[in-house]
Picture 1 (cartoon, rainbow, N blue to C red):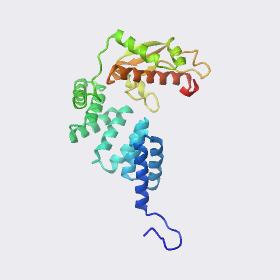
Picture 2: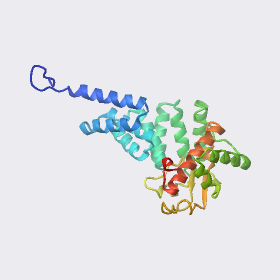
Picture 3: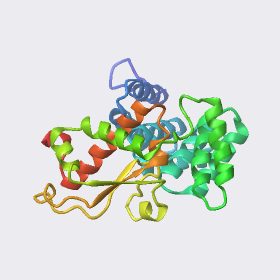
Picture 4: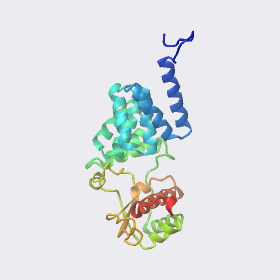
Length: 273
């Protein structure tokens, strides 16, 4: 027995301590405190490296933080412990896709769809991966349509917009930016493209996610000249952006993407402006 209360030192039973840690992790996640959840999960895994729920919760928190590479590693470890855990398979499909591992994304998403035909998110990521694989466009559209039928507000098919509509949306997105960033974009050309190239995404370490909405062309200068030596163009990826639930959501997503690209180019944070 671990606890000794009659004189001398005593300690909490290992199972109780683990349970308390898991409660703290879940509590942090329910409050959206992903960094706290990650730290708590890592500390638990230091004590019990193969703890299945800690691995899963760590992966989920990393996914929420946008750390797709580390999240994928945690999901992989959880799946190796037991492939019966469908939520981990779904997480692996999502993070494999976001790190440009399309074959893994397709295989794991297919398995989730086999187990749970009504899982819209699995259909969605299966479709996203398939539409980027040569010769699988029709199958990808079928999966994306299945996701849209199951959860139309969450997984709509891309909006079909004309050039004038895109110009209006881009203008609206730029207007929402910080004044210095608005000035930055008055001197930058926009180019509308369908989807980003996987080869280009994979040149980054870690790979950029295939779902990104905007990407500048060129290499950022040093921080002192970033405001003067601007990128020649910023590419906007119509199919990714067009998956927003509404035009206003598209404007919000595009504005955030443009902010991120500009700040990375000039080597600043929004607090520096």
